[in-house]
Length: 387
Image 1 (cartoon, rainbow, N blue to C red):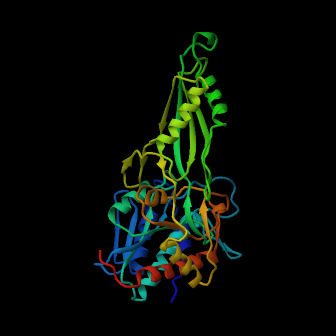
Image 2: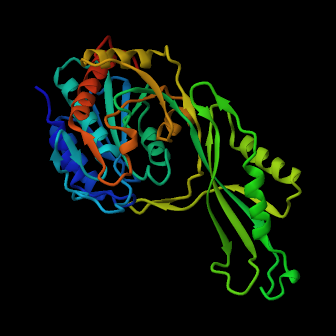
Image 3: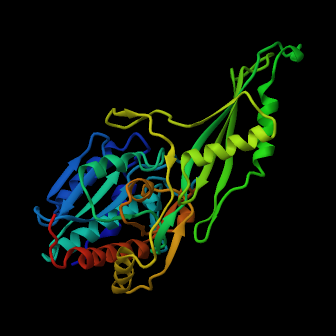
């Protein structure tokens, strides 16, 4: 008997959970996990929820991960953002695609597999916090609680198997100035001039490319001077924030060294480069300054996990296909930092995430539930493995 993934997704969409305020959603996930038969349900210090099924003395074959937090509602919606309205085969609401549908499908699919009584290995689902603020930070503490042999990131993929993604790095480039009255600019050093030159120089920075993940990127996302606003005075400093999309094999030092060399070759000095570590606070009150270096990752197309996922997609009556994500996910922690075999596979279109009138196809929800069930049965219902 299948579990109603549509109703569960709707209930989750109707539970607002902005980053740092996921408490009600966490409580809902805990309740539903217990009702669905998860025997080991716990919450870590950050507020992420972990539920496990399967024999207590077995190894942990799979961890399905989805984040509970959603981005703010902006713009003029034609539907209630947290209403979960269903029409024309789609459910509307913030988080429907990104990514409460993925969490609901994982809970239902794993529970259905467990109810067969065939599991010889354990399987877990984590509903993590704060991913929209910094990827991987919350999953790290979840992985510290368990040791999965493999991870499935349930971000939207149109039910395509994702074998990798670019990484992400947030960089602050700060130019020092010498303050002076704006009426006598020659008495100071204006850091805005150096910042403007840097933006032009770095447009031509030579960046690596990857056969399947594409080109690395360096994108300026904001610029601010100190003090701000600077009224009638030359600023003391100007800082540019960059979003650097990285590729497998790159290190944070590689990235910073290339930028520094290009700037110095252009005659620029009096600057500092740093990877951001902005403070985050979870709904439980825990605080941290996670390093904004989220590594890229890729799994081989012929890896056993990829093959098992393809078989599961086929067993669920669909045609398997393989691709990669353009955006960053919690996979940067599981695969990029820890080397745990990881794939992406989830319901919904990536293009619908963070949009006005965000929505997800009901067929995608049911498809993800069925694929997850078949993947669990294929990986965790065979011969038992020693821990």
